[in-house]
Image (cartoon, rainbow, N blue to C red; front, side):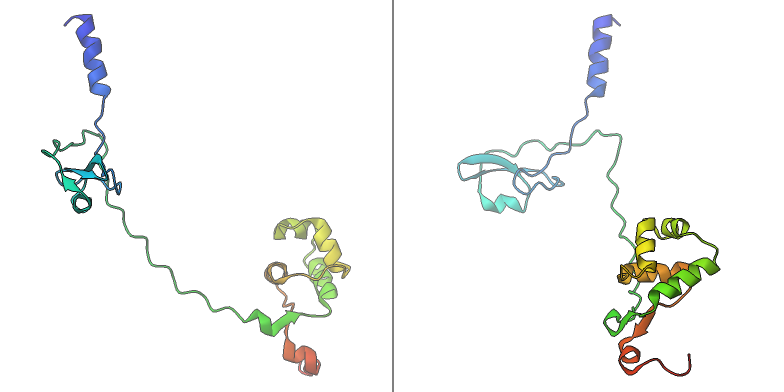
Length: 168
């Protein structure tokens, strides 16, 4: 085979034919396409969009893909689990002695403020400000502190209004 024919053949092999798509809705053409005139423009459309215009001449020949990859039907994602019911945070607030509780729990675990900050993905300055009562932790930080320090910083509003229960 001459060198020229080999180059030509290698160029032909690299060409892949794209699957045709409807020029109106963009969906892949799975059935023979239709050539219709819509508002003066001649378009190649799917069967659903063919009713939007007037049929013009013969339909173009269907295009078949010669792609090494086949489109697989997408599997449906598994259903999401039911949401875990959360305690209504509107009924709870942070304990007034949160700063002492956090400091004592941190020291009991043998952690520095920097170590606790890195565990919580917070800056050490945030931990310092919370322990010095310059910053009241929001609900997200309170949940992180509850989890890492294994303490409960939330108190129901009824306990705060009526004083602490005598049992604790």
